[in-house]
Length: 382
Ligand SMILES: Nc1ncnc2c1ncn2[C@@H]1O[C@H](COP(=O)(O)OP(=O)(O)OP(=O)(O)O)[C@@H](O)[C@H]1O
Ligand SMILES: [Mg+2]
Figure 1: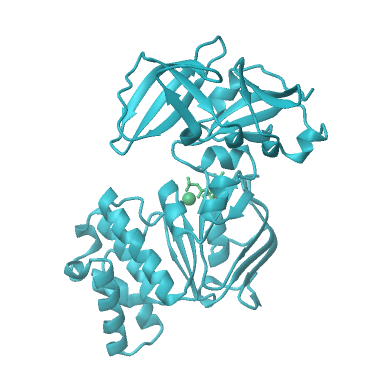
Figure 2: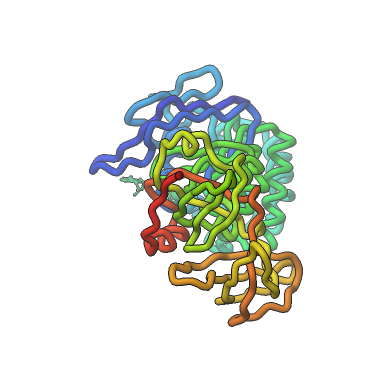
């Protein structure tokens, strides 16, 4: 097993596409690191750079104690499962699994034992005599995973390995990957689009945006203490509500002006740079579950209209707009089934302790962008 370290790694493709920009990242020996980010942010490139399939433009890649810049892929003892999981079409599933073992000259008994173990784990035993052309997409994906796992490499790289599986199988295989990782203590870097996968699988999660690392932290920290508005808007489903806002103080109390409504905010929620007047424009954020909704108003409650209601059984998602001119949509999450329906007037409130304040970012994740683009609020701390 081995750690993986990237030191100031950049990758610029001919033609100028910057896939990785100055990445510093350390994956500990035996760690499972999940990498998330929007399409095109550099996730696959990061894996390919570790595998040796792409050379870095600048910076260093280390596997364990060795600097591997210039070392060919076959000498890195790294296994990679690709996004498009290429299998050898003229070999059966069993032969596909045996291929990397034959290359390593393992004994037949050892080969058979490893193949059986992995096939059982991934529920592909019945598929061993078949050819890839006779498998479904999800089955092919599992075989590709199996081919990486039988090698028992020092580092495993997974590029969205479960994207073709149905929801139920995803959960099973996800649990299997976690179990395999725990047992083998293989260092894993795992790329996914899937929020749940990232949050449940990763010891730590790395968030990438346009080739830049935004934050690397355990899932809980990423959720509770996002480093910036991008991470806040990317992690969580539905994501955090983000709005341009102003902060003001009145009689020693602090308030956020959000879409012409005034919300109390606890002083502890304001970052230091704001108190020292470092930044004029801010973004206020609130998680869907931090918004209280009620059919009746009162002091500190704001009227809102329900645009859309999703009853999910264990919880209800409420899409609402505050009753004023600037209202863009909020999403609130309340537990259980609630008798709200589209068109209802409700009242909302946010605990002063549950607001987030971020610097105005250079860009927000896609879902948050239109909300911000429509507003012209400017911010100052008075
Ligand atoms: N061989 C290449 N030549 C030129 N540009 C490339 C090449 N491979 C990737 N890129 C560019 O580098 C950037 C990062 O690509 P990459 O495949 O790493 O993204 P990704 O995060 O894996 O995206 P997805 O989630 O869609 O798989 C993109 O802008 C992409 O267009
Ligand atoms: Mg990719």
